[in-house]
Length: 402
Ligand SMILES: Cc1ncc(COP(=O)(O)O)c(C=O)c1O
Image (tube, rainbow, N blue to C red; front, top):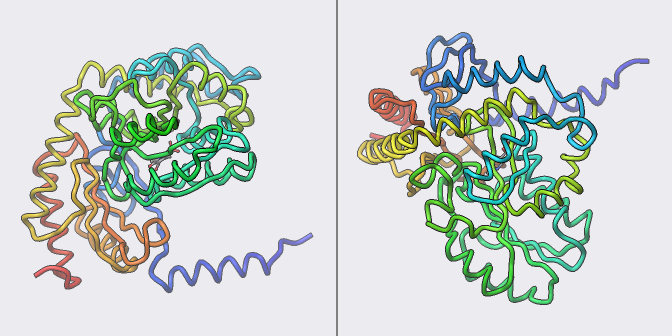
């Protein structure tokens, strides 16, 4: 038996084309924990401006220690899915802490928010239901809705990004549906914009719909104490279902969760396919994520530092002549245009000791490739000044600034 060489050759040719088009993604290897600065293989110390480590908790000692303690107490992993024999006491503790944090009666953990989202839609809809999703929702939501449509034969639609009139029209057009679900991100990851949550909630009330919100870029980030988009708008307790990640502000390891009523979590325990057919969140990760939430509850000032750093960077980059997408989150996207330009600029920035990823098509629409700068509470003002200087230098070199 030999390997199928034609298959390998065809993949090699596709990858070569990506390289020729200047859109090939090269992996950079880090040799130290995520923090404001990291050691990168072959590069030495670089300043990170593209991590979701919003609160700087990835290397927070109490978070790391909790993971080690979890490892000692529960061993390496669950060895099973939740309902067979993969549920540890730490899962229940984490879920109680998460539910309290986001202000819902219950929560259920998953190995990733991708998994949490993926299994959710098909678990709560049936044929005759209607699911409507913001055009710029995360890929995991898009796939979740596609799966739900193919599994359950529910009807689906997409409303223009943030366009409440379009959302209303689609709800009205589907008023005969048994159940109507509105899916939105809390913060849109490529734009850094915030969902118009109060208006979406009002539309849901007017049209008897259910709001499901992915708060992955909002948990630990928005609201005075980091409880997310609902806290930001003063509507905690009003969103039917919240999903979020443990892989960004809350320690940055991995994992995700769904928070909502006990009935929602119970239904997901019964029905969500990633929950039923994939191992549970490793107990080490559950323990460190729980310590992250507890740290954040004790240190809400980290959220303030993140907000102040984000405002500072945004102001400095505007003063330097750039025109980032407007917003008030730590995601500050600088639109470059062509994918190859954005990727080239991010490589040149790495030569200046700044790690910021260029995003292009198909992650963002054609012609809107961008450098997505992400700010952390771990950054110092010197770090942020250094980043602005480097971006300005590189933009001059490629002819995008004077
Ligand atoms: C909005 C959103 N939802 C879900 C995810 C997936 O999160 P996880 O890494 O926990 O699977 C991401 C990660 O990029 C995200 O930005």
